[in-house]
Image (cartoon, rainbow, N blue to C red; front, top):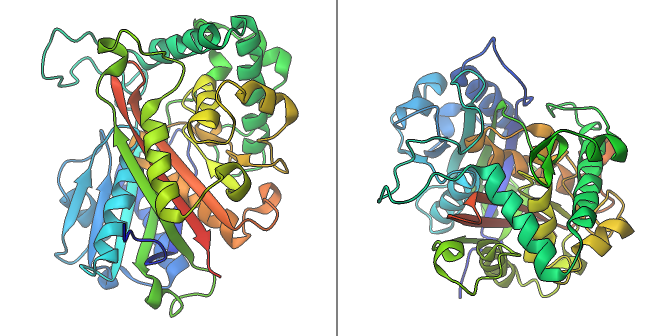
Length: 394
């Protein structure tokens, strides 16, 4: 498989603070994120040859990106793949640059959720399923089922799984307290996480990410051109994406303790990147912790823990900053919140900063490989797993 390893580079990124931006609309957020990326790369909007626009709720055509940035009649593709939209847009841009279709492109993800009356990401009753015999699934209930099935399958008391989930929340809130762009910048105690109101058992208030506004952007070019822009560019090592097929609903033998889409996507990315042992080779990973149980499953889905052994690694501090694989060093969705179309690009922003050694007090020591992972949908009604592996230049 020829792949795109080391053919594409990120030379600039930008990210707004993720927060309740009542004084801005989505165009303001797009401008803030994109101009930070332009200035980081040393380019101007007129230099961009094509763009990808990631959003679920805040735009329709390519003009939604063209108008605020005054882009000059270039092709712009809108991507919507639920919570994996940002990774999907980036993967499309990487491929376009790798095959030589364009040599300098922009990816922007942006979303405002606080003022559109959306109580929970993904909880829209008008979601256009092909058959209305499908029930509408609320994400929190689906991921609560994942927690219950995980506990049952591995013979772990559900109370113990809830304790592990609380420790993941404490870790991510600590990391978020180190990040000025995170929505929530306060640490929490284990006791506070355990005692929080229950949303859908065992998921409590501190096990869920928030509804937020935000935007992030990336400037991408060919690897052989990257050194003409900066010395500390970041290379794309491998990508993978896999879509589910409603296996939880239609396969009576399905265990329900893991998310198959994540396993398939990560193995594609690892093969392209030449990674044999992700636990030993990946230094930092930013993963889709929409709920703390999701992050626990992801440890195993992405090969950082043996199946069923994630709780032991949480107890050992394996995924803390300074641990064997630092996960969600920026605070994750748990502290950034989840403006759907923006999140995947925001995750890449943290990996980019970590590989450049510019992550401030949350910096991992000498990282060489990093990973950004998104999951769109739920494990019950089928989703999309997407993984991008990035690396620093040799």
